[in-house]
Length: 455
Image (cartoon, rainbow, N blue to C red; front, side, top):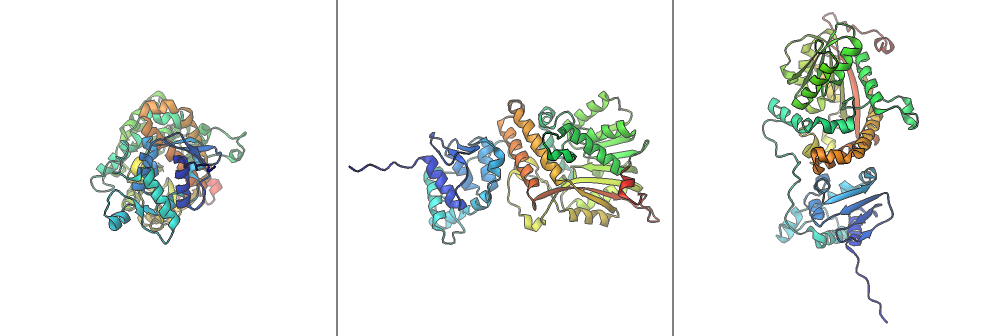
């Protein structure tokens, strides 16, 4: 008697197709819209809730397609999101899929195919499987939270204000879910105990330690005048005023941040010392300041405006005044980094640019600033991001209620992917750059050793 062969399930066919594209069996478990499952037992399961998820990937065969599928809810991640994002070569292999080749070869505009075939029949067979599983059809609409097409000149004041509003004006209560009571949206400063989770201090302690590190590098003394560029929710301004008795002007382009910061300043009884403005740094005209801090702001400036940024801060500093610039940096050059659209540009930081440290230092020096110190905090940011992910997951229902499921998914994906980006060498880093405006006679006003000027 001949036993009929059992046809492979949708999950089995899908996993086999991905193996053909990636070149290795994906070490994840897959579940499809028909309830079928395949793949090894794993601490992460990728759920294709419908066939539209496949079309999203094929129409945008790079990071953007996967992001759209997840954000829209067509694709779900159950379990360890870090495990999935760390899969080697997933995005780069998917980039071998493109729609344009099919239009040239077949004239069928809705049929995806492979541009760089290179004789790889397995990729062709995988593509055919994707098509049979639901790849045919028009491209699905992007999720509603995707950034619309940008208008105006890049890094103009109006467009920068719009970009900042998109990122920050999504609700202070949402940010508080994962930032916690400090409301500090940059990496904490973790001491050596961070290597031992059982002895590790809290995220809030790490954030307060970071603020104090900035204050000590700036050499704050009672009576000084501090400009905090991109002041966020006012944490640096309040810390400096309370602990070092300085007067502070904080500027932000986010109305929601400014409202929250002003409320915190008033509650702390610091209204006579701290002023929070909704103002572009290019419009600050009441210098000179003794010191300037810029924490997590210059990523919004961009390469084209970086010289203007450096020159403006130089002009706002008194001679022998210090500047502390705390910013994410790319490890590779901008030309090597590529510019494929994805999560960051389309959902999180429109017009944001992460530049090599060398670009920032060059701009500062050309503006007349003297760079005296730089400290890399890459591992510190990885720890901070994982702490934010834990907090966001622990408050997931509240996050969805506050900003909706699509936006909550973008933030979970963004924070988790960023953590991996800082953990892997050669991708992202972050630096605190200390610079000074020398006096006319060349004096920096800094003690000769780091131990002395750190206090």
